[in-house]
Image 1 (cartoon, rainbow, N blue to C red):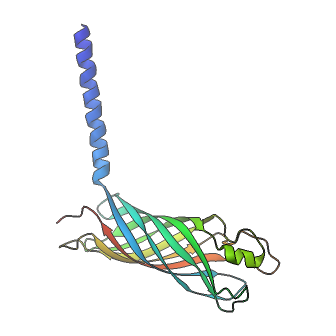
Image 2: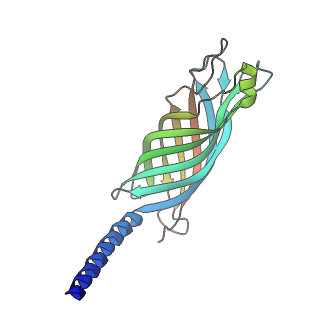
Length: 209
């Protein structure tokens, strides 16, 4: 009787493990990983001081989970440099306001059979590097808030065949909804928003003919 109970327990455990492996196997088969890098062109929107675009860059990784034949969820983890260039430097003659964020967009993507895709969704940014020099010119401890959030959308193309399968090019625009400034100043209002245009090259691993 004991042997029968032990055998039944082993059988049930093996079946449960197989089902669990099958579930995670299916999940993994729908998931792809890749790398991305490219250029930024950022600025502040609704700033009380005159600015123009500032060149920068982004680099990081991405995870894509396939929902169906055409739809998927794309999540990036990008180190992104952004900010703005002052048109009329007056704060200690500093020309650029330079910030760096860890950007995490979570986008719904629609991709055609030919490789063209559209994507849109929310994005959160965590401040990595503040502009301490500019904060000093304003007489404050912090210039930018630690958290920024908004929406992003874009389009691109990913090669589906041949030796370059998995290689992609894309353009994306991010519009922030939160105030960038984290300070109180009589001369400058902190209620301006982040605006970033990006052009990227990406590569998804494991794509085979």
